Length: 518
Image (cartoon, rainbow, N blue to C red; front, side, top):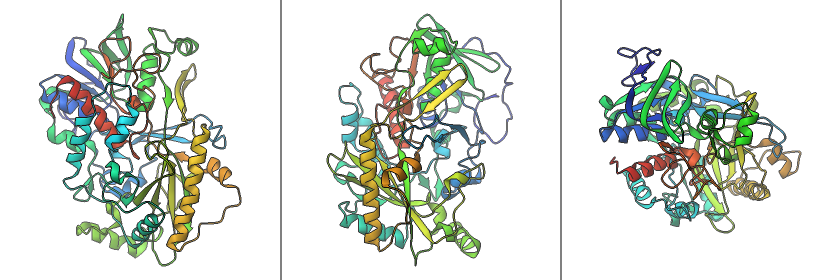
């Protein structure tokens, strides 16, 4: 349906079948995740007529999306996420792994782990070296915004033991790893909450956009309309609409797929899929990256974890504490409470992260009912290479989409992850705990146990020219007019341990280029 503003009801919305064939907008934004909402918010405040496309539930106020811990109950629910299986991961036990992306207004900011790090300015300098992108003012302003002060996750005695152990092993306790001098350190997690509630990006959009300038169409875009080498509009279920500019913000999976369905991509792949070739752009869908996560479990006698605190009387008590506004309620955090960044060499080139996760689970049981905690008195340490070298792809065939994250295909990622596993066991020992026994070499455990961190980037990466990427430093698609991309897919590499705030940064850089004010 088409409507002027995200509401609980559909009152006042136009019919889906209405054909808006006239030039009805200054700008069409495809995708209302973190980047798309931020772009729509800022464009609307400049007086531009914005049409915003997004599927899924409009309001983002489901109880499980508002209470930080409860997001684990909807992570597999297709009302809130688009769930697909990856191609078999040859370097990860030949397994097909779930690929999840957020659905509805707010996108993945409604269902992610709620951890909020933009990344240090020095990392942006490294990633955008050779690309004339002006990121300094945006990142400094984003850091300033977050120091007001930034909320921390719930933490407990086990969190303190983790932080103490990390300091003894080379990651001193710091306040904010978003600053270079503190990046190689350990801290309680910074989270995107307000008054104990998840603050997904739809809340900022509601509070600050100019609603009279925005129309939201809750229908899938079928393709981008091209007039020669210029994008002029889109077709969607029910009609077509034209605008002066089209901006693709559908994420690292959907953005390249929509380009391909519109005839933009590698010519040989499009022809094999039976699609027309309107613009040969070989790097569309290539260079997909994700964090390959692994968890090691350990028993922690004397510490009740979420495995215990989410059951029976303990669960009721945690709910009471939450309703009373107490900061020690487990419901205020994402299930993890603290993290540490380690490196053997350059922290911005060769580093891994270890996070304390206050539960254990059977990952094979994740379903539309979400994560199921085990009952044992256990916790786990999550490990991943911060700056993975492995690359995968998003492709289209005559049978449909094929998503290949390419986990552990670069030997450097295997080496970094193995170092992380050894360090995680050292942390457990320093805390006075023992890891659960395993009956296989570490590399076999790694390849058989990694899973997606859901931090997908890079499939339309920014580059100096079409020979190495998809968009330039102005976010415009190489060789085309009137078509830009602004979402996590344009990041040439990971900018932080988590991708939510870097995605916001991309949108603000785009706006800065246009002279849009926040």
